[in-house]
Length: 118
Length: 312
Picture 1: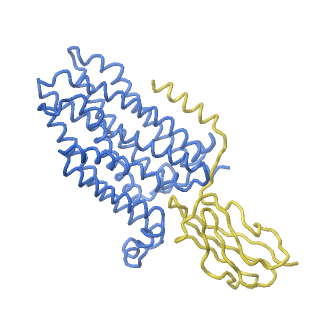
Picture 2: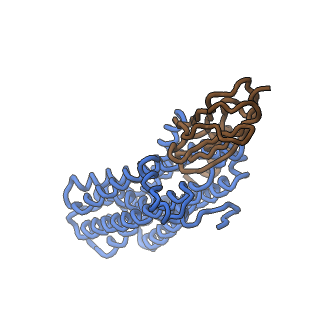
């Protein structure tokens, strides 16, 4: 195959390629949902990521409105999902901080909040 | 270190690039021996014996470099995962955690065992069974790289496609790079042996077939990988990952250019009087230099976040 035709074919295929983007170990969704309001204090927080995670180097902490840590410690990781159990933490704004290592050895972190009660 | 505007972890990139190039050289040399050198040269001939020994030596050198660079990669990766220095990571037990509890560590352990098996087979390389086992171990050593990279963490069914494409991409890259180095050795040995006249042409023709299969595989699997990791044309032109991938594609096209000249211009002229063999040797050296540059670029790409998750 000539280089010129190769470049042509490759560029055409890139142009036609649709956005099947698989983001890399970024937060896909969470329960309770990011920024949402729930009536009662949740018993656990679950996060779904765009990639499979390494349990040994992935963690999540949750603090309540008073800034006290209310997660019970070690997160449970299964595939691209990470959960942590919570102690009762009252009402107000809860903050979730996560730090994960994806299976392809990339580290990412982030945080979000959700509201509990009125 | 800043490279093309992207923040690069220099030592990690060097360790990865050297490890990939060395592993590909070893596996490619053994592939070349199985599908080009053995059928084209009679092993009992003088050239056959020389080329066989030189290809084995090339495989040994590649394996030794791959082991040293691989150890460096493991230490640097552990340091990056744990946030500690390399020394601290060994003392604190982070290295053990990485080896026992992460997929990267598990694959590294398996690949280390494969490298040892390959070394044993190369040591007993005069026997038929170890020769084939060496090829098998080298193929597994190359393909297993796919499980340490981006393809390993693509979730769901797409992950299987990504891993398959990546493993095939690695095979093809190894066959081409290691094959070019072995071809150079063969051409040099055949030039000094009158009895081997004509074998160059046979070897070059056989290598052409291996080369064209590799190029076709690289294009197809490269498109699949780019579709998963870049995802869009915008991802290609709006991210560091995209630009560095374009650089890789440009280097690849230059390699294909040299290969096309070799195949369609110089090979038919090998049997005629003239400089075809010398030009073929020069072009092969140029192709090898470009291949090593491609590995340097691959060393960078794997450490960057793919374009697909930066452009939505």
